[in-house]
Image 1 (cartoon, rainbow, N blue to C red):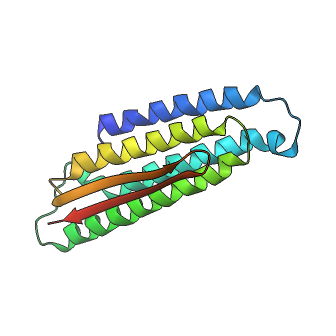
Image 2 (cartoon, rainbow, N blue to C red):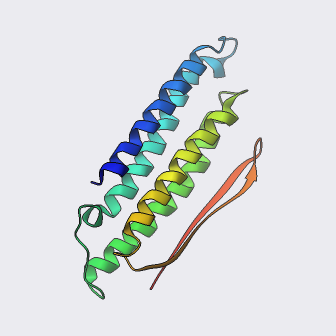
Image 3 (cartoon, rainbow, N blue to C red):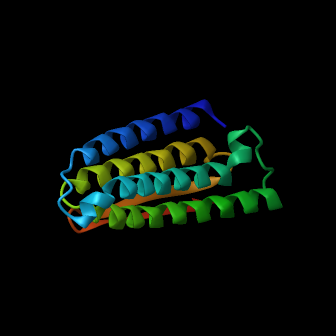
Length: 158
């Protein structure tokens, strides 16, 4: 796998550590607060898994193997990428739901995880765009906190 893509997970580890420290400082005054550490861990794991799914969907391309045009391998990899991007968009909604259970202050953490995942999408798609014959791609974000954001990721192939 590409070192830049691999190294991006270090940033996610840093976010996870900061979130854990922040959540540990929350006084346990409710059942939701007592669940906060496991909620944070689950949310970070969900984002990491979505990133890894994106990586594995295009693993041959990240390893320097470009599928030949009009091949079954190209079509399969394009389909795998599309599926993993759809999963990433759904993961963002799940993470928002998970961290809202923690309560006050979760918005900042949610935003950092969303930012990491969207940055990861941009890094990977940019890296594989030529090899997978991506004609156009967009990442759309609408809404905001406290209501939550909606994310759409669209890829058009040549």
